[in-house]
Length: 300
Image (cartoon, rainbow, N blue to C red; front, side, top):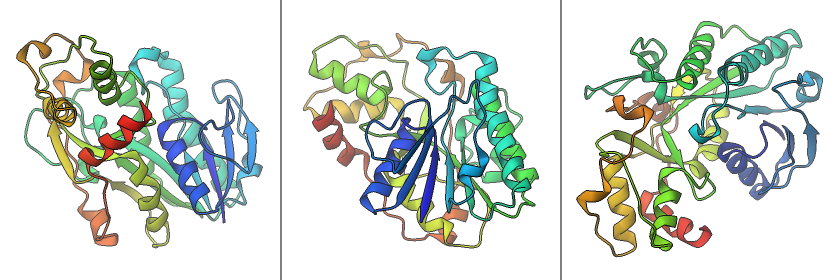
């Protein structure tokens, strides 16, 4: 088996690469830099902001994962043109090129439940609910992912299998240090002051290391299209912060909350329904958030 990973060092790419390493799966990697945390069998240097992929190099792949993206990390301040180019137009162009070349494997792309937009109601969104949402969104990242999801929903007549997975908030000890969980843990360990939003946002949490096995198992079934992966745990942001503090034997105080501002604050409640996934994979084993904290503690 050959797996191609487009985008070498993001959280998803890293977890997919490590999964392949553990299972002795041949990996081709396409990206600006060689993988830092996993070993690829072949590296193809390409900067998708200015260069085109060599589609021919992908055609022997059983699964192609497109994990490249822009606008994911708000601190990087990616331009709108980069966000739409990498999140929308490159995967669409790649889909078209694979179609023209008669590719017969599986092409995997990813969406986000942030595509739902500014939702304040207690609604759990199906795949089509996410794809058809017209709620306002806060930034170009959300719009770009929404456009890709709608493309996949509308164009599944390919010789290959296109699987597009809508993900909730993904986390893991290999994620960027500025994100909520490592930021909180590092601040506690260094005895540094912290500032958070009010923390009332409701989110679903999925350990990134669980995703590769779910998709790998899913690919064996004759299914394609858009599928939600919701995970099993839904918390407010405040609850996540409280759980981290409790892990270190600490309590939170009111003065921590309500001092920070984030663009997603208007998205009060984001939840997706993964019943379609569970029909196919009813026995998924998810990593518990409290168990993941042990791995964060060892790595940070």
